[in-house]
Image (tube, rainbow, N blue to C red; front, side):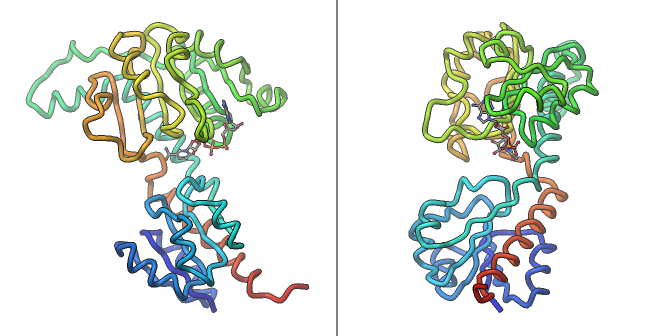
Length: 311
Ligand SMILES: NC(=O)c1ccc[n+]([C@@H]2O[C@H](COP(=O)([O-])OP(=O)(O)OC[C@H]3O[C@@H](n4cnc5c(N)ncnc54)[C@H](O)[C@@H]3O)[C@@H](O)[C@H]2O)c1
């Protein structure tokens, strides 16, 4: 039996799997870091979502840790190098959130095109401003998808049902795969110059230059819109603000920021042509359950491997 410390709210379905496998599950959802450090002293495994920073100090507090499970896509909040140095396996749930992220992309994109957020706020304030909120259709528009992995490829499939024209950019995707998806792969510059809507689904840029900065916004079609449900670090926020204020871009829909949460005074957030959500891409009942199950199964497997004698 292993002792598993659960540092955040994780859907019960996964925790049940771990209990049924005979493990002790210690739920610390709202506990302060001090308490977490204390509990880690005797823990074999740690489960987190995105709030807990699993840094070198936290890992050092768990001398018996053999696995860290991150219930989500990516391991941005885990110092993987520090974990590896201690022989701690880091596990995530790479596909559990995908459909939710895809659907949130459309929620934000359509909300932006049809001006749902300002129209709703206007109605809530007692007004009936029918002519103020004229939107535009997705049908017939060119949708440029940057990153055609799990999320991007499904955005493409659903966008086809909306009768959008598709362009894609993904330097690591074989042409053959793109052809199967029915997408024309083009260089980023060409995608930016020809898309009415650019939607980002690439992996985060580590430390380097954001994928979209002043130069890239200058290359976009005047009046185009940007959707970012991927990672905040992909976009230079100041350059985006400039492009929105100057009218070069007609709008932006953002679910992700760098850092998170963003500064509440960030002028980008209060622009009338920006619709933004607090990293809700994966926040559905279904995704959380799927992610919890996938992470728990992988952690149980890793613990079974760690406790079985080498063959
Ligand atoms: N908002 C949310 O809650 C939420 C939820 C799920 C995923 N995400 C994010 O969405 C993004 C996509 O997730 P995924 O599961 O599809 O990942 P994935 O790894 O399956 O796909 C990422 C794709 O991006 C491509 N890529 C890498 N660098 C690129 C570049 N410079 N230009 C264009 N393409 C590039 C890769 O080749 C890959 O095909 C990730 O950044 C992920 O962190 C956000």
